[in-house]
Image (cartoon, rainbow over all chains, first blue to last red; front, side):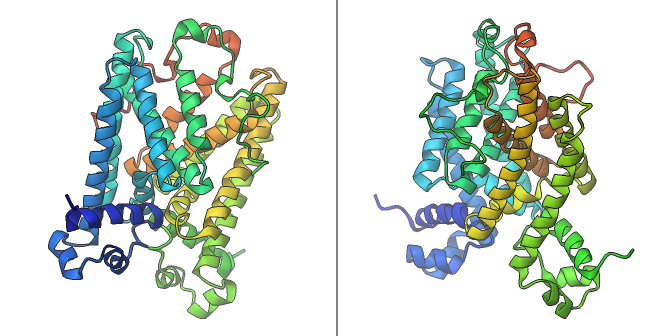
Length: 219
Length: 219
C-alpha cells in the first residue's frame, strides 16, 4: 500500500528535522521533496509547530516499538535487553549518517524558547526512562543488580548519558562515543561478585593494540 | 573600568544565545538590550555567525579559567579537582537558571547545517577533554586510578555524559541530572581496593529517606 500524503510528509519531515533542526526546516522544501501541495499540508497540520509535534509523536511510536521488541524478550537477561535497545538505536543512527537523536536536537534547540516542545520532549525522555526502569527492576528481581539499586534513577542516568554521547556522535559523525558510554555504564553496573575482581577505571581500559580508539589528540 | 562596547555585546549575546539559541537570537534585540547602534555591531563583527563564534571563544576563555583554577590546585587530589570543575560549572548553570551548556545547545542546533560551528564546537569539547585527561593521568600516576586506565577516553566520556545531563537539566530546569551523573561517574571510578567492597548499581542506590530524589514518576 502506498503511504498516505500525511505519512510521506511525516517521514520526510522527520529526516529533515533531524538533520537541519526546527528553524531550518522549510515547509516549501518539504513540499518540494514530497511533491505535496501546500493546501494539503495545512489540511493535515495546523502549523509548522503542530507538524513537528506530530513528527515527535511518530518518532515515539518507533521508539516504543523498539522498546517492545528489545525489552519484552523474556529469553534474554534484563540488562542484556536494555543494552540491545540502545545498540538498536545506534544502528538506526548509522543508517541516518550518525546525526544523533531527534529528541536531543529539538530539545536543545527549542526548550529555551518554546514551553510546548520543552514539556513534550521531557515527557518523551520520561516515557523511555520509565520503560528502561521496568526492565532494570526485572534485573534487580532476578539478582542481576543489587536489591538496593534505584532502577528509575539508573534509567534516567542512562537516557541522559546516551543523549550526551549522541550529541558527540552528531558532531563527529562517529559512533564511538555511543559505544564508550554503553561500555562504561554496563561495566559499572556489573554485579557485586564480578565487581570485586575488577579495578578502577575498568570501563576505559586501554584497548588492545590495533583496535579502534577514540582520543582527543588523534582526531 | 567600563566594559567596552564589544565586551557588552558579547556578554549580552552569550546569555541570549544560551537561552534562545542561534536562530532565535535577534541582532535588533541584542542592540536594544545593550543600547549599541547597528553600525557599531558591524564594526566589531562581520556577521551574526562571526559574532556567535566570538561568543564561543569568550565562553572558552571562561572554561579554561575554570579549568586552571580547579585542575591546577596541587593541594587537592586529582579526581577531586576534576569533580570540582564540574561542580563549579553546575554552580554557573544555577546562576543562569539551569539552561544547560552553551556548547551543547549550539552544537545540537547548528551541527547539521553549519560545518564551521560543528568543527568549532567539537574542538571546544576536545580542548576540555584534553585538560580533564591530563588531570586523570595525574590520578593514574598518583595511584588514584588503575595504571591501565585510558585517561583520554575516560575524559571524553565524562564530557559527553555531562552534556547529556546538561540537556536534561535544561528541560527540567533542575540540577538533579548533573548530580546523578557525577555521582555515578566518580563512584564507578573508585579505586580497586574500595570497589571490592561495593556492590552493583552503587551509584544509583536508593537515597536515605527525606533526601531529594529524581524519579520519572514524580515529576
